[in-house]
Length: 316
Image (cartoon, rainbow, N blue to C red; front, side, top):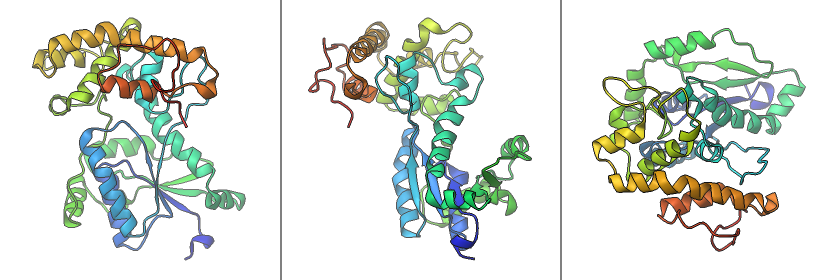
């Protein structure tokens, strides 16, 4: 059946084990999606390394693919921002999962994919004819995904029909891992932001210095507003504190003087950057990523008195 005589098929790729295996098996079965979408997120380092590898694999196997990114519409007095990291630093908060909610996934993963599909001509043509877009989700038959699937099954969407190919094929997590290995690809582990509240102790220990510094910054920036949680890990347990910064300090993952300096100076420097941004027209404001780049380079505690384009390059 040609693409023009059926509803377009869009695969959601999360850059983790399940969705990667789903796409591989779809190709093997001759069921290549009409589009595969990945939402840009501040992923853990191992996932960032694997994304270009599998995008090349998809290109080599004729799988159309795009990376989409959340775009905030209203900045008020803030510099422009896009990613979840940008949003948290701009607004002085933690990701919603740290408060027991899950809106960060809906806003930064699902929303930009929906927006891209709504502007996609094949989808517009299908909707005009009363068809729904088929969206492929990589839930497998393992216990955890059985729970996720049970939460989603029966959901009715006016624009999308949801399919779960791994479940149709009775694939478990182990089946997915084996399929990826058989393709000669490196292992694809759990995909998550490097500051996700679901991070395990071992995952935080494995983070490079740059990500550890950003975790300290995130918690320091949000600290004045925290009332019900200690930090990114929410509450302390017998195994670890509720604050990732406290864990990083206790484990000696960063020098304590460096942690103290970030806490004492970086949030104030960021607030100054925001104050400067508010004083210029929005089209001339620097993206917050320019400040983050400066922080990562160790130059964050010297805010300029104006939005000098040499100091803070303006967004294109």
